[in-house]
Length: 388
Ligand code: GLN
Image (cartoon, rainbow, N blue to C red; front, side, top):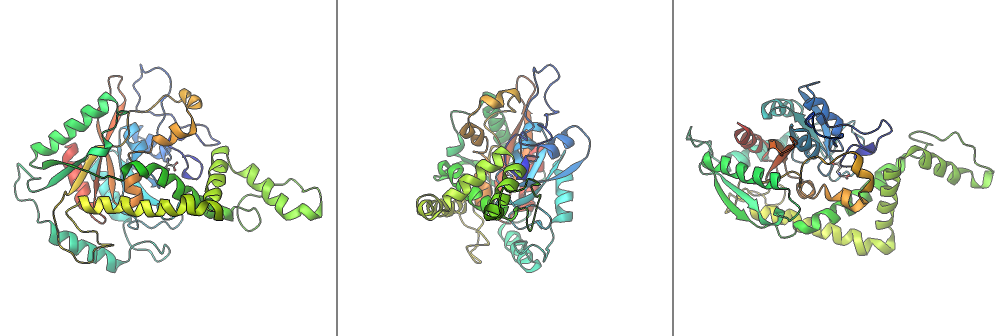
């Protein structure tokens, strides 16, 4: 994995990069496995295990799943306990499951999706029962065997149709929509107008939270401590912190802590952090407006309205990039890999990436299905139909 889950390629690690095992043998040079849970995806893709856990703050389960050609599921925020997980961005961090098939992922998810008093954001049994009731009322079970998705509406969000999408990705997206239509689903176009803000909003909020979460690594109460002795008593404590944190964190983590600390300063807070929080709300509301199912978190017991049951769009703009090209890539270009995955993270809603074919040079492509808050079972059911 990338150190502290910060990255999209599993290149920020003292152990070196994770190499994508799904790349074709005649493909020149190693390919990125995706990150930050690249090791989990690579292990599943290489057949070392059937399922693996990962953590998804902004796409770290879905992006490596897509690039390695496996299934990667980020459940609704709060479904799986985070007890034991090192915190990155606490309002976003979600444990996810990777596997070769949707059925494997679903079985593992059902085993770990239980309440846990040790994580205060983990849904209680009462909340789970309420959400399950709401979902069951809203959607009657499928009646037609040949057309199991009849009565189901799938949205294609216009804002994800960006120039940067590779041809293979566009083809995979079209075939995925055709496949769902052939099973009886209605395919409609929807708009999520605040999508373009998602990436900057994510990197503002995630880094602000990271700077706060990682403050505990001071080498005094917590974490590794530098053995270097400060020159004199006067500078003792602050110098010790500085040595510890400079030695202990990798460059990318230090960069992010600095950025996160900056956006939380009183001068920058109003300019960056506060607007990011407001935009996050608007991104959530875009999803609520698109889905037929009401959001159990915000809309009380409102019944099913107009809208779609799930959204379909690519997990990444293209297949896995070469590993050796990464040094030429700017920081901002690297962050752009997350453009398709961060919106669902900001909204706390479930999203799954499934394999959807390969590019001309044999690299896997992933498609993402996203559903309303709490609608995890329906999402996995639809994903398994998309793959079958
Ligand atoms: N690539 C994103 C980041 O670097 C997401 C990471 C994650 O989901 N852990 O923040």
